[in-house]
Each structure stands twice: as structure tokens, then as C-alpha cells.
Image (tube, rainbow, N blue to C red; front, side):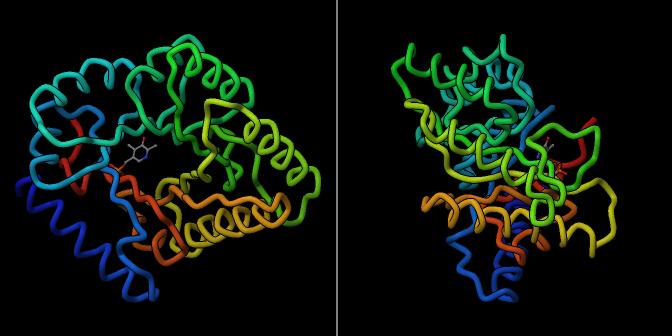
Length: 240
Ligand SMILES: *Cc1c(COP(=O)(O)O)cnc(C)c1O
């Protein structure tokens, strides 16, 4: 199966999920996650029409992105989807356009400062841990609708981050637990959707993007309101 065929197949599945949930397919961006795949694979995907590419490791992005840009003519939007250590923020600012994984106010402050030094602005999403798994990065979001302290913490973080001059806060991101049953996965996506609505109305602001859904669960995510699906294996094949 070629990368081109895989992209067409994923686009068809996105369109079908949109039809089921009465959504416009143009409102769902397909972000191909190329971690542990080669720059050549990315070039193929871009040639097949993919405009959004994501990586989860800074070094890997830093080495592949210039190679891809040299080989293509059109523009690609580069997404950072993995945890960013503070000593790597400078490199992130250099090559990425949108960071899905803002998981602390400190990280956001540092990113805005270094983006200002580089005279650029970055789009950013807050990663929220709505499943409550201890192993996950992200702002604490478990039970946000019942636990006032959790909602308070999220509102404070949003407030501080929204003030940073060189970050544009665009929305929220989450990951469902691996291998969880469909009902739980759906509830986690619905929780993030509800949290976005609650943050918007509490702050009278707009958070248009919801980054949720991967190869195993993107159709559920779309049915629950995702605007960005992050798809690796269904496009690039299994990872070694
Ligand atoms: C790897 C990865 C993905 C894509 O996972 P697949 O299951 O291969 O689609 C999405 N988001 C993040 C944060 C990832 O690290």
C-alpha cells in the first residue's frame, strides 16, 4: 500500500465520519505524524497533497524538516505533538509552526520569549490530561466538570498563556488511553469538547481547534468534534 493510497483512504474515512456527525470535512485537518519515518516518506505524503506534518521529537524534526523543504515546492505546516523539554524550545521555535503539547505555563512563557527573540509567533494548543492517567503529560483536566479546583487551575493557565505576546492560543489537545474501550475513548473526547466550551464561555474567547484522534480512534474523535486528527500508522505504515 502506498502512502498516497493510504492518504486517500484516511480522507475517505474522515469524510464518512463527518457525514455521520453532520460536520463539514473542511473543518477537520489531517495532520500526518511522520515520527520514525524518513524525509523521503514525508516528501511522498506532501506530493500526495498532505499539507500538515507532525513530529513528536524535536531532534528528529530539526533533521528532517530542512530536507523536506528542500525537496518540495509548496508550503507545509509543521506541528510539534510531543513533550518539549525546556532546553529544546529554541529549536522548536526555529522550525515548527504549531505546538500541540503546551503542558505547563513555564513552557509557554519560555516559548513566547524565544519566539520574540526569533521575531516570530507560534500557534499553540494546551495539552490537557482528561483521562487522568499518571503517565500522561498535560494540564490536569480529569473530572474538570465536577472538580472546581481543576477548572480553576485550567482557567488560570489559560489566562496566563493567552497574555503571552508571541504565542497564539488556538485550542486544546488530548490523547485517549491506549487500547481503551470505545465508550471510554468517546467520553474522553467529549470531555475535551465540553472543556473547550466551558473555557470559551468563562473567558469570552475563542478556542477553535481541538486536536484529538489518532489511527485507532480518529473517527470517534471526529464524531465528538475534533478539528485536527493526528494520524501516523494509517498513513505511513507501522513503525519499526
Ligand atoms: C505517534 C503519535 C500520533 C500518531 O499515532 P498513530 O497511532 O500512529 O496514528 C499522534 N499523536 C501523538 C502525540 C503521537 O505521539
